[in-house]
Image 1 (cartoon, rainbow, N blue to C red):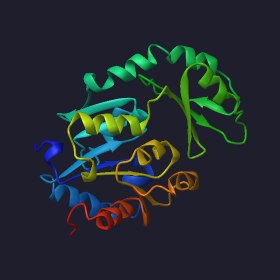
Image 2: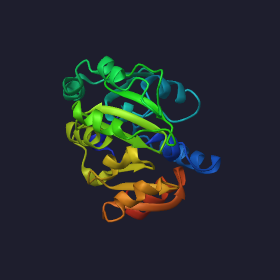
Image 3: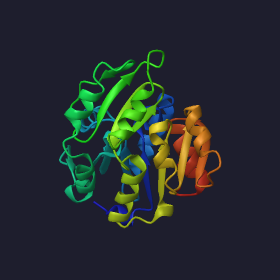
Length: 248
């Protein structure tokens, strides 16, 4: 396998609404293009999804990534024999920032209006489904006072993350660790939990159909291409606009 630092192009992409978004034909075109150019294209999933979901997803016809930045940036892992294997050297700072905070965060937000705890036991985050009509935003202050970062995305999810940890900082740490030249990277997303990734200074695309609040955040950033194409089509549109890799 060619090291990512030697690839012509590295796609660092969100999943829902981005890599998994758009028409069947657009997704097939993107996925086939990646598979046909594995020697020159690297693939990194940067997602709120957990490793178990990713492993299951990739058995259904979606291309396997070489690496995963999952759990909203709190997992940094490689793919090894079909398994998502955390990289200790890149997760040490995350683990130290979180400690054993899960039980304390869950207790602090238990029965909070508008929040329903998600059943997955994440390692370095706590996540809730959010009811925007019932939500009391005092949860934001409470989380910050505890020393953690709250993140609301798609007006549906509420994540509690280690202070300073999210998709953008984790992606930058990853790119530096593997010696990937920044102009070769394209970060792709569509909701507010992708904001730090699109704002981190790497070439980026907000795909068509992105959350309006995300578009407002990135509107003035020259490194961010705002695509018309939905999901997968928007990724290919940005690759062409940035002239980052030949397309079919």
